[in-house]
Image 1 (tube, rainbow, N blue to C red):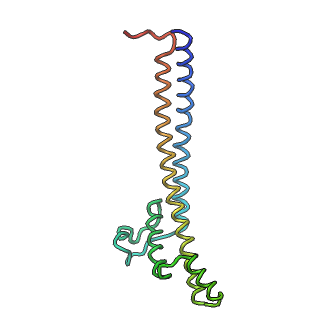
Image 2: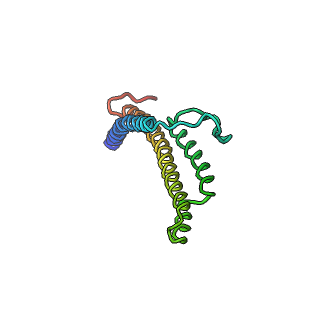
Image 3: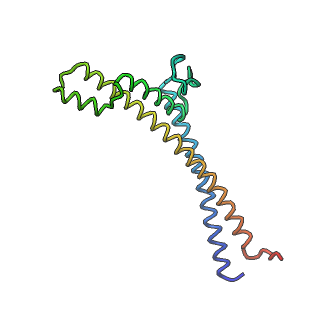
Length: 167
């Protein structure tokens, strides 16, 4: 084996070792992030009502929000309730109406407060949902990097000097 092959084998081995080391760290961090999301959602004690859910959410009846997909489903539940409470208007639209009325319409101010709270809750739940997907991505990438790193180390080992050439 000439010098360039030795350098290539050493480089493959080094890159493989780095990836094989980084991969498990990513898996560990992804799983840790998932546990943190579950713990935070559990601490909030959010549960779907037993009855009265829209057809698309009926499977969640009575269940606690424990995962990212659950958080998204509850955000959709809030969205429906919010649309009914605000007549389909957003916080910004209601605020503009309230300012147009000189800020003195108490009923409109209450609707604006409802819109603000509902949209804030939805945003928080959607953040949990997005973080859930991010932890999935990190975990899967970590597993892939671990496998790729192991394959590169094995390839470098096969190319290493002192190994008998195969016919």
